[in-house]
Length: 512
Image 1 (cartoon, helix red, strand yellow):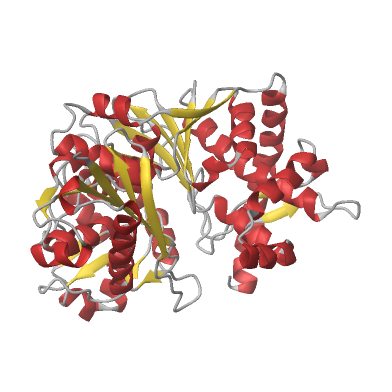
Image 2 (image 1 turned 90 degrees about the horizontal axis):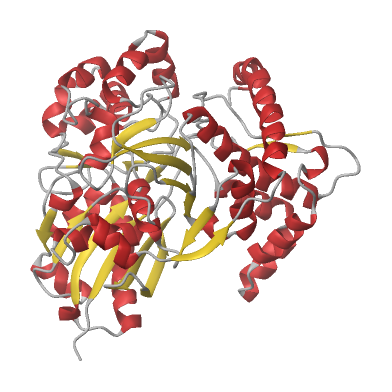
């Protein structure tokens, strides 16, 4: 009997994944491989583009082998990946230098300079997105000042998914979801030349590729690549949307009024809207979603689940090592420990600003750093663990409260969606149901939903989402807990605001 499948590729910040889905959106098989991540200088974050491509090849081959499918049974490939960042190729399609990732902090001083000059605000009025260290335009400005020869060799400026799409098809392009929040006008949803002038990078405008809608970004799989991967030559490859929008789509958030939080390396908190939302000004992102005419208003924190990973590695080192050896699920054990601690973590509060580039939502401050407060001699590591869970939940609440758009229900995606404790905390904090969709690879599912529409398997995004996304878990808010989280948020915000001058002084004194 003939079977039909869709293959999703998700080039994440730390992990490359390939996942095979049936046409009903069920996960059939998958494989993961560590991505390339290097920090050649403090605060920098780069990837070897060749290593990333080899990881993609390996995961595709492993996924197909595990599923035991024939090449002609794969209808299409959908490609997504981390957003922002700068992936440069030369006229031969080869990398010019290692990719600069979204989490790279080298442009912090430039970002501060442009905000102080009023250019940051001018850019927000055009793009609807607040200038920050993740911005590709800032990376180009830095390269222009520090590595001009690099840009002279550059033929195209890509992002992660664009690089993978290029390797698969030979086509050089980006899409609206990636380009819109960096270079587009929110009014026209097209490239705005003044953006390049304000950033001082107009000389490199010719190497910024075209940006069609994700549904239109389709090309055939190259014959020699198909042979290497075990796929049929000419199989349609569809790129986009990038992982933020793809995860929302894969979790079922596709249309105005839907909300989705992605708890991954970063935290991405988004509401789908009919038109860009510019209040409050100078914060967060506005960007195109995959369905044409739908926009995403989002506030992205620099870190999310990374806080838990760091805490577990440093404070539960014996358990971490034992789990690494035995393959046991350490996260279930930690969650049980945190769940035994009371709401409010016995007076300990945690701010999850762990990234060396600081924070970008719901405020921008490259000097922001993570911190515990309220620790006393009676507290244990389990108490602090509970505070880490709550600190991440409070950062989510902080973002939605800042956006000011009511959340009537929340779709949860990313690795953190596997945590019932976080899901319940968010339901309590928002006073709204939290829905976790079936499966776990939401970014890859979003990519194949887009691919399914692109090849005509479904007539619309609405039909594709209805067929391919199914709720698996539902969390209702506990009465009374919302007011307790609101009180915690008041304290959380007061402490954060009080730290602004201290962070600046700390950076001046310690330089980090």
